[in-house]
Amino acid sequence: MAPSAISPISSPSTEKSLPSKSQDVDAMAAMAHRGKSLPLMPKFKTHAETRQWQLEHMAGAFRVFASEGYSEGISGHISVRDPEHADRFWINPLGVHFGMMRASDMICVNLDGDVIGGNVEGSINAAGFQIHSAVHRARSDVHAICHTHSVNGRAWSAFAKPLEMLNQDVCYFYNAHSVYSDYGGIANEASEGERIAASLGQGKAAILMNHGLLTVGKTVDEAAFLFCLMERSCGVQLAIEAAGLEKHYVSDEEAAYNFKMASTPECLYTEFQPHLRYEEHKCRGDYKS
View 1: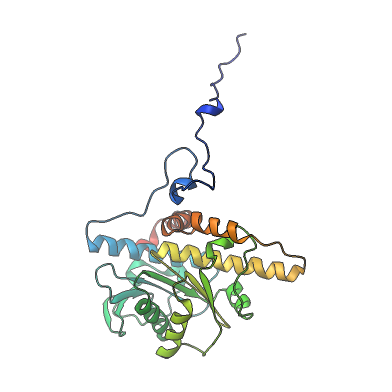
View 2: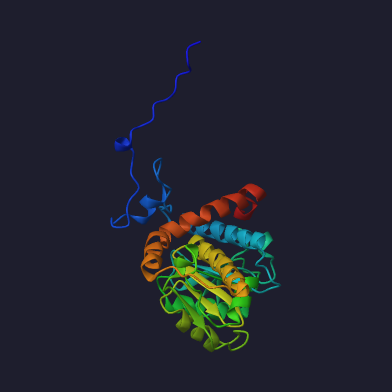
């Protein structure tokens, strides 16, 4: 019997080689070896189309947060700056569980707290407004903000210490996160929100002592992925501290390289898409309505 035909294997000289760290490689191009490039963030022709897409992804992010166990009573909020009006942002209504959030639930407010549109019958978290409005005022480059009282984030925040570069993934926060160590109680006053915004500075995230975590991004997808990653990183750090063994740190050089290659807005947007698609699969896109 004749042997079965076997597809020829390309010689090493014809293979697409992986980029070396010495090369100036585009971060998105480096994520996929061979095959099609990963999809970039979509662009729309109208503000209305962009707005609807943002609200759908915002609601989807809440569904992911619910699956991750970040819900805690009426605490926690995500905001997204309106694509047409820079002085307005969308935020979740008070008292709706993350796992039930829909795009149509979101409320549009201006930086003074006036309800402008969306779910005008809903109420918003007063402390949430103070935090989000202060960050949106301070950072015109920020389009989305995430904050919840997640378990590991609250636990690590009690130490008022930044995360250490102890593994590859936490390097996404290398020199890009801060600690707000002046806890002023529930942020019902503008001054507390302003202090949190000042502590965040130009970073991607902040650990709020005795409170929780806050992340920001160019898209809600970026901010949401960073939040999930920071929460897990706090859990990893807590486990390492509990072990009490000698730590081995990622070097500054390697941490800086990891940050450059993996922590761009485009990469972080892409990182969140599997989580979002899984939620869409589970609820058949219910959150988009």
